[in-house]
Length: 310
Image (cartoon, rainbow, N blue to C red; front, top):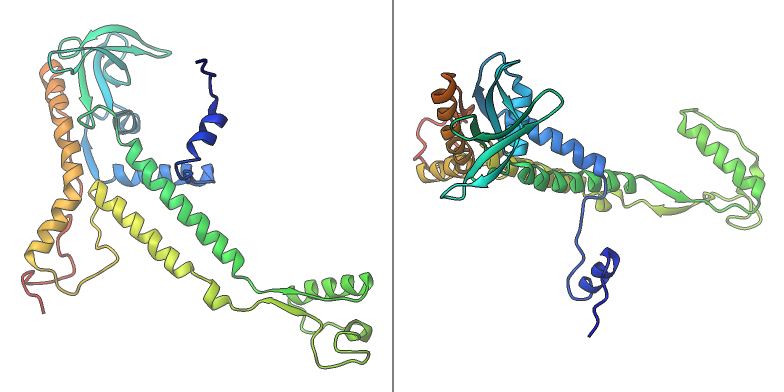
């Protein structure tokens, strides 16, 4: 049997016959906006202690988004952090060598632990772009829904006119009214024919949609927006009370909230420690990272007794 190569359109057509179609954020600019915003938000949850000579923005971006960064001693610039690619594996399948290539440096076959130090942000060296992108798409979709709902909730009318001239008159009249003119005078003939041959009290328009209150769901969408943002904050270790606030929190609830907000952040901090120790051993430079918010998940609403439930 001969097999015909399938392109993306054919694969999507075949897959769509038995799997639901995927939903993606439709506005890339909105996704990029939230990616930048959430990255800055995530980085604010961590305090880095690195030499002033190092570019902190470069260090944090490469480490968090790229997943790892090498620290190497160069003859031209001294000991500096650099993004690099690694290859080769040790006994535990950890990276063994690093290559650094940019417009200013060309360093190959750097043995990790001897020729350079390697700091990883996550256990799998992959960074947190997937976390940021995951929540960015959700926030972008919610933002687009808010804009769409606000647009569709405006008052709108379908206006009937007997002649083209009458239609133009009504359009110009509505333009003048929307600009704030207190009174607009038009030919009375525009009102004839709506309720008969004579001028009547019936307005010369038909309502398209006046049920704005029931069609507007912006409040619910904004609540969902805050919920997603709170979930991201909890993911990266930023204090949040969530959408369902309680007047009193018991000790167990506080402990659960603290663990929920710190588990992934603690994983990142633990992943960076071996690399910082390696920098200290090779170059004598003290580097560290710590959580900026130490009261994550604590009851910061002024409660004297967290075990009190009434």
